[in-house]
Every structure is written in structure tokens, then in C-alpha cells.
Image 1 (cartoon, rainbow, N blue to C red):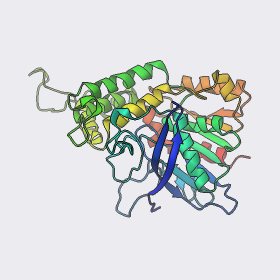
Image 2 (image 1 turned 120 degrees about the horizontal axis):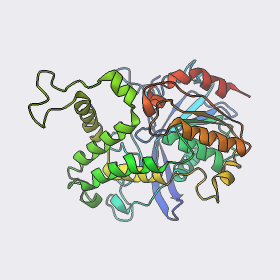
Image 3 (image 1 turned 135 degrees about the vertical axis):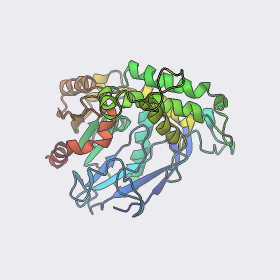
Image 4 (image 1 turned 180 degrees about the vertical axis):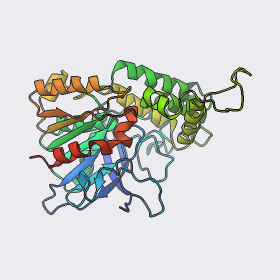
Length: 372
């Protein structure tokens, strides 16, 4: 599929923190055709480091398609012959240096000052993300969603959709996700990655726009993120204990390296070039603050609002949001009276398998989406 980025604009968005965001802009993509009755829409919510580019290619020479292209398209589980699939950039998307990403966040111009928000940008929550998506869906005339799905942070959003707009969502697919971000992840990689950015002298307390910016700190943040997004099984299989320079003895000096170190660092440095450091910190904060049904008295009270069917898809080797957390959520959903089921994706790819190996869940996805 050849796809095109579109832009949704909103004059104001009232945030959970109590402030109002003005002149909101988010990019989005659509695949398939909205039915005359507008009842065939599926919303895809992206992961922390992702964008709205969930499927297809922007042109015929683009080598890598959208991250969930394996399951979105003609004849695939999210069949674009049957469904109208919508995917939007989140607020505060970290990839603001990518010209195809449209998002309102710390790097955006504050209409009141004419300068980038920087760290004056308000604190966002997952609920704010879905409220912006709700406004987008309403602008398209969509009043009910056939399904909402997403991996990792996208799973947070999908579950929050079912709580915040229970009458609008028929099915929810929560991939490599959970009902909250657990304390271990808040600290590592969350706090460690943020500290790496803040300690970079080029961060300058977030006032680095127009300058080099904290690229070294960002690269280290992505190294930390990769450490927990992959798995030890993956590392053993792909690089093992190979040396970065096989022709050099590791006993020659302290600067000799293992291949896994240099390869991950190389990828992290390239990734950092497209990322805004403040947006990384703000988005990580939104994740850390997440608990399903934010604003409700308890998780139980929030989950009892759900009217949608829910499918959970954890990955067996996930270190970031491991399968036991998905099982905890499954139990909580069932106790709340929700029709919930689970399919475990078997892979040594760790957390990222829910993005890179989603094809392994194709049958489960198709059956769930087509279920009554």
C-alpha cells in the first residue's frame, strides 16, 4: 500500500493535569475505506518510539514498511478490504525530527511566546493521547470503533480507550502491555535513560533548541532502552560473546569491546538523530504515570466500565512488560466481568517481538477481529 500522511488540527485540548493545550496538531494515516455506515473503523495506537506509520510505504522505493505491515493490509488480519484502519501520531511524539511526523509537544512553538515550549510544556497522560484520538475519530464521522489495538504504550492507549469511551469500542487488543507501568521499568530503563539525557551538558535544562542538543545522552538512553526491549536469548543467538575486533586480543587494553556493545551503540546513535530529548522525557513521564483508568478510585472501578471484548498478547521473553503482568491484567479483567482472553507470542525477541514478530499472532488477531 502507498500511504499518505494527513494532519488533524484541534483548537484546544483540555488536559488531565488541568491545563489547556492550544493549537494541537497530530499526523495520521488511513488504510482502506470507511463504510457508508462508518462502523468498520479500527484504530491503531503506536508504541513509545513509534509513529503513525503502522503499515504500507510512503513511496515505491521505501525499503521498510510501517511497523505492523505484517497484519494490516489486503487479506491480512486487519483486512483493508473490510476495515478502515486509522493510525495517529501521539502528542509529544519523540520522532519530531522526522519530517513525516506531526505532533504537538515540547519542540512545538508555544503560541503565547513564539518560542519552543521546552520544559514549560504541560505534563501529559495516556488519557490525553486518547482524547486527542477521540477528537480525530469524531472529525472523521466515526462514532463506534470495530477495534482498538496497539503494542506496548499503544496497548496502554487501547485499554484506556475501552475505559474512557466504553460505548464506542467493541474490541480491544493489548499487545506486549499491561494495566500499568511497573516500578522496575520506571527506574530501569525509565529513570536511568532520563538521567543520561539530563547529564549531557548539551541538554541545558531543556533549552537547547537551535543548538546541537544532547545527542550523546539520547544515544545512551536508547542503549538502556534496547537492553530491556531485547532479551538475553536474542543476544545469545545473534552475537553472543563475539569481539568487536576479532583480530585484537581483549587483554590488550581497556578499550577493547564486545560486538554487542558496538552494534547497539551504533544503532542508538543513529536513532538519536531523529529524536527530541525533551519529548523523550515527557513521553517517558506519561508512561510512568500510567495506570489503567487514571482518575478513578481503583483499578477495579475502572475495569468495570469496559464493555468491549479484550485480547491480551504478551511475549514469552519480554523483560519490559513480562507475561506475568499480562496474566495479572487478565485476571483483573475477568473479575470485573470483562470478556477477556490471552494469546502468548512465543519468541526470543523480547519486548520488540510484539512489533517485529506480530505475524506470529496473525491467526489469533484475525479470529478476534472477526468474532461476534
